[in-house]
Length: 165
Image (cartoon, rainbow, N blue to C red; front, side):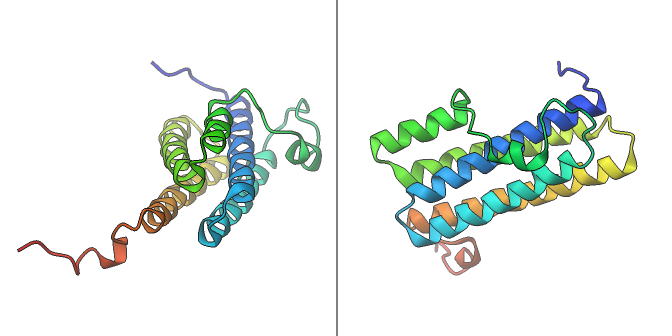
């Protein structure tokens, strides 16, 4: 059973989630040797920063400080995502593992935000969540395409070309 969140609790959780994602993508970009993956991670970090700002604009709590200070604060090194990325760096699995982690995280965010948005009454905040859900699904699709490229799999745009007889 899921906890029912107040609007401000949901926004604060979303802000922290987006910050974690932004930090993850920045770190993933910094360790990527593959230029294509580096570009994808950099793009995603920027989009997560945009999501964070959109949620921050509606958050009424003062406990996170101002937006710029919060965005510049160090990553949460205790988060499972951060630790998984650090482990993949130590193991030398770089882009591949970072992309796998990212796929799971984006799917998790879509699922979680979909649950949160059901109870949001404020139409403006509801639209923010709905927009972020769509964009996050787009992130998942982009990461999946990049993962297939890195793993030299068939790209989604080429799938109809390869048909078994």
